[in-house]
Length: 290
Image (cartoon, rainbow, N blue to C red; front, side, top):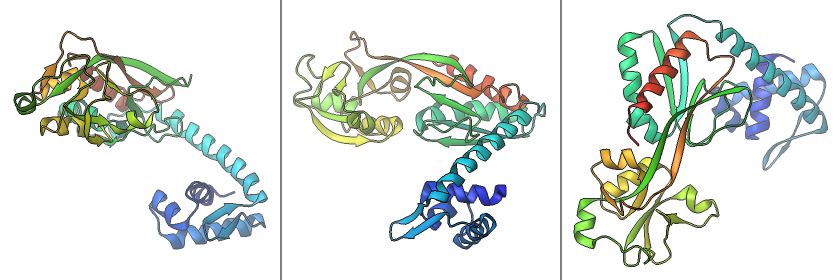
């Protein structure tokens, strides 16, 4: 199996349409179709059934996919091992984190690094998705969930508390909710994935049953911006709420503590440019008071 054809085959397995595979790989649909035809011809087998819903693997395609996944894993391992031997202070380092961490911590840190090491190009992806470091989808991840993969090097860079906040305008107009009233008479801004988790939803350990949801947001940054604009009461990391000039409600009540983890693959942690990006990001989090 040709590796270039195999990459397209795997993309089509995952996306199930020519358009989706082309978009994932940054090529046109005609290229995907041509490569698939070349691979099927080389193997002498039909790998997909073409249906109205998209491309579905045949029995031969399922066998081919197992082999293709092994090829992908071996290629990623080779890349990681070669990268781990690289001592140049130039080249690309891919970082993934949330939009809040990116804007408030990571981007300022990289700006300082760029002055000293302008040859390092950082490709920053702000996403709540867990990119796969073993497949080299990223070199460094900053997460609030600690991964269990033994091939990953995990370092705690901060421990922060969350807190309940609202804007000064909101507090002046609506007052501060009384603890124990489940936010009766107040508007709330909630993190949508928290609502979708199936867990009991609280803010600062207070049930929200009598509050009115004014907005739900898919990221912590959007929650914060909604609070700044006076939409209601919400829970955000303590350092971010203070930095935004929001009013902390119920300061005597303890909120959830959570850890922030910096993660990289063991094969790339000694790469010079990856190491220096790790260090500058870790220092930046260490200076933020949570």
